[in-house]
Amino acid sequence: MPEILHRLTIDAPPEEVHEMVATKAGLERWWTGREVGGDEIVGGELLFYFSRGDEAAAVMEIAENTPDRVVWHCVGGPTDWQGTAVTFSMKPASDGATTLPFTHADWREPTEFMHMCSTHWASYLIGLKAGLEGGSYRPWPQGEVNRWP
Image 1 (tube, rainbow, N blue to C red):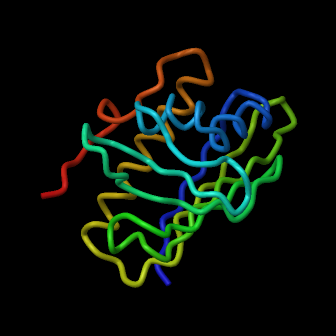
Image 2: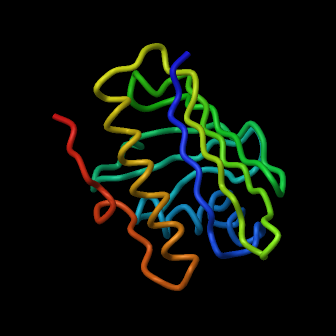
């Protein structure tokens, strides 16, 4: 099945990167730019809001949350996302940095929407890197580089 893959090195320890991808407060800082709902526990669901509406744009069930890996399964949101899996892996580098392989897997087919999502993920992940390295995070809408009709 098609998947989105990104890999970056962040000059921050793995535990700091983990906090940013595993907690609602962290996700709000670099991805959504507004409150994330739900529960941060394995089996819980995270609700992601990107607009001013009250309906979650995406709902992710937390399938795994360990110090070196966070996995979500999409259970609500865009049709193309439903049934996909998002994985953040934190790999310590010898210099105290973290290598972050990212995967958004199990797409049914490669579509224009998938390509747009790949670009968005890259933008938001670069914002995560920038923020953890002392610069500015670029959550939605600053990190948005494309609009879907």
